[in-house]
Image 1 (tube, rainbow, N blue to C red):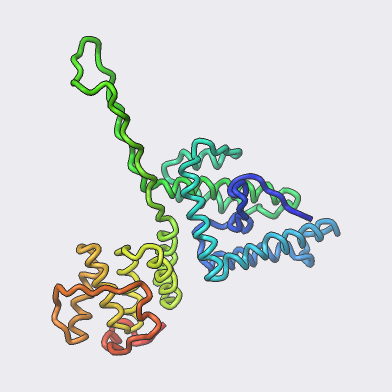
Image 2 (cartoon, rainbow, N blue to C red):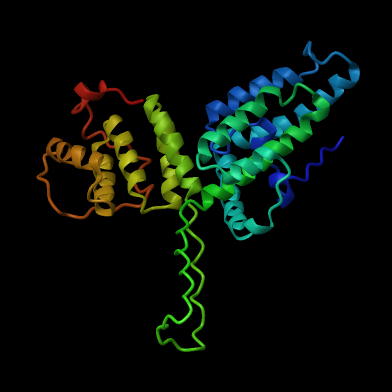
Length: 318
């Protein structure tokens, strides 16, 4: 049995694994796994909810051909990174094709117009997830609806950095003198498409969530991937510096705090912690520039500051 869906992101020869699981496009691994287990229990042939042989067969087909591949793609670090990169490219494409995108569902049309994008999007996805596989015969339609929401969210998120066009000049009143301008002045060129930063923001959001849970090793992986894409992101440097600090790797923390301040001299976290690190390392604060590639030296932990911040962070590496 083949499942053909021709709406939402599926229209771009792309398998929307987030729609299959009905999770937001920036869901972290924990959220993806939780949702997968819910769906897998529902679709497994031994489930009490699939009463007839035909339903059991359909549930097993959905599980093996859509749900399991979606989880495999989104749960692996490398495959998820590659997949999100493709989503980023689709987001750029959607900006250019926004006028030709056709939306079939009312919720997608509302998302295209609402001011509170994130809240509306997550609420709509969560609502679909509640009943996504209640009717197995309608599951593909629900996946298509979720994919339309994903499409609109990507399109609007990618366009957040767009500069609003200047207000239209009022029409001149009859008899009002006009400034002397050349008759054949060419129109101003259209602004370049805005830089796509959706993927980096997703990495930062996941990293911040992991830091809040004291899962520093996983947070560092997310931030390293973000810095590969955007090496001059001061927020990434500041966050990964905090991760190194909490792991008592003071030299690496110093390098990234230095980079954060070079990119954003007003970064509050870097301003707060860098002098303390300089003091702990026996250095005087200076204006010396320290640069590093996102992964330079990251593989070798720096234990020179181990224990110096033990009173603050418990002296343990996470």
